[in-house]
Length: 537
Ligand SMILES: Nc1ncnc2c1ncn2[C@@H]1O[C@H](COP(=O)(O)OP(=O)(O)OP(=O)(O)O)[C@@H](O)[C@H]1O
Ligand SMILES: [Mg+2]
Image 1 (tube, helix red, strand yellow):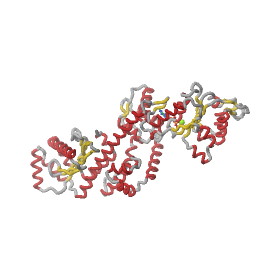
Image 2 (image 1 turned 135 degrees about the vertical axis):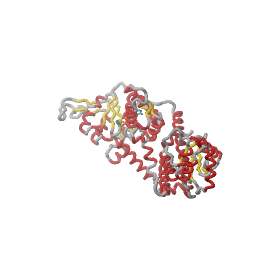
Image 3 (image 1 turned 60 degrees about the vertical axis):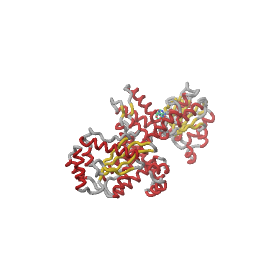
Image 4 (image 1 turned 90 degrees about the vertical axis):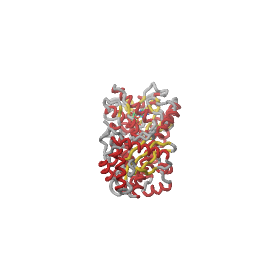
């Protein structure tokens, strides 16, 4: 079943509709499989009709006749083996275009574009229409005026019109099948991975997270050092804690030190301690964090920021299990398990000479890679549930729920700031929702709410040359399709209903080079990331 109500939010469809009304004065109706118009509400008196005849037909007296015609056309489309066809309108001399909304053997309904003339109407035809319409109880004068305002389309224009109407129905199918396959993917994954939603405080049921949980289970009794790699905000610290609290050291200290937060000298004394008088301000002996973490775990966060001298010192502790506090000559023995994390590419740093290779192999005995949120979108719903439930509990307010449309926005957004950004957004909408139980899309930060809009279609023109407007639309649809299908040209060609060779020609024509588009996407994501700072309430 198609969610017809959602279509008004789909930017491409909206743009196509606006081109159709602006250029051809046609009203675009979505008709479901039972023949019912889904985007017209008879009680809506505000609706502006671009087509004067549509405005007349939907008045009370003639409305049933009009609906009957729409329904008959739908029936004809169901039986037709053509994608689209031209038919006579209700009075017999206006014309309509009907395009099937179908996928495989499934018929979902039609797009019904109403209406235009294919020739100037002569008085005899008018007389005929007058008799018919007056018989239905219509106000002939109003209809006569409406007829005179209809556009008479040339052969070429009718062809464009038909193509555009077809595009609308294709977009509906694409949108629908995408949503359906997305849901199927989520369902399949849910079945496949059973019911492990969390590990310690970590939430996630996606395949990468399941693999991570499996690995964490396996290394529970290990004493090895671990290197955790992952982008910002992916949960590196959470994993380090999970490792510690599942290990045999769990009853002893878990100590975190952020290596990038100190300059070299301070980090030195922070990690290894100092003896009284070893430098100005060292008024007494101070234990280093290695000693504090004795028998426990020391988590070295942002290890890629450690200076070369500190790297040497750290290596010595790891190799010998002894350390020398700053300003002291005594060696101290410590029993500490080290975990380290970084978002930097340490291998590349080794090549640049900024990270020691021997240290790298010392800490990278076991390597855990945390996938970014965009690679495990299946986790988004459970994470949202978790953060919203936690937030509402903390604030002692009734549980809130994300509207379906908001959930889709969350799903489509690329989350450059990862889980932390998602967490902040959940906190923010709980507050903004006030007393409302449902969190609607209007409450989301603009970068999330408008993400799809901006990247889908920008500035399809509705004035100027029709050919230019169509080319622009074609370019945008191909560009978005390429991104959506991961540059699967065969699939996209099928979706667009053109040959693969035809698609390749168009890709070349519009210069839609993969690397160029990737660069643009990365820049857009970086910009979205940057703008997030000011927005989180
Ligand atoms: N799988 C998860 N389940 C629930 N919460 C998570 C998960 N991963 C991360 N978080 C939350 O997201 C936030 C960021 O996580 P964390 O600080 O562990 O990430 P990080 O990789 O260390 O980030 P940074 O690179 O900024 O240091 C935290 O508030 C954490 O609780
Ligand atoms: Mg961190």
